[in-house]
Image (tube, rainbow, N blue to C red; front, side, top):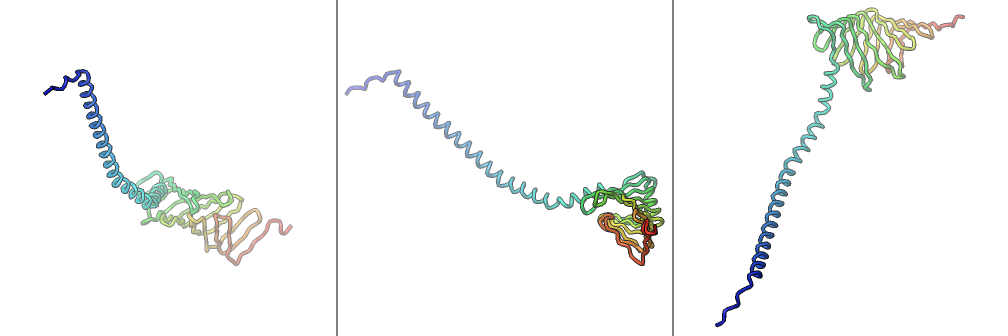
Length: 225
């Protein structure tokens, strides 16, 4: 029996090297594939739980946003001034009407007269009119209802419009949000066209429209010349 010839040492080293390299490559590929699978599973798990949570958070934010906006406006609309005991001097209140236009209410002094009710001394309110002018109203005393943004004025009430029209009466109710006012007390009006006496008036659209209740008497400037 003849023995196989001794293998070439160089060829043997090459074979072993190829075998080792192939084994190492398979192990490396197996390791890479396992890592990819683990990462994908983690990504899928995170996506399943994180994305629904983010979506629910966004929906919750959308739902409570109007309430947050309302609280922010209320915080901005608080009356400010210098406090002296239970009253405030140089009081100032800023708000916005139904169309987002600003108005301002000031008073020499203010004190709480009940829940949501503020008694004012020498109150004065001003706002922009529809046509870009302005409207101002003032009196010797007043009561501001914060929840409804209504201002009840009394004693020497004067309403002045930028075009020179002036109204004087004893009592006026002003809706600051709607830009409207009304009075059932006798009123005297002076303006560029003349004078008018009436039993009351209704003001709408921030002073653009004024309706007088009768009986009324008007004297037009230059009518007798």
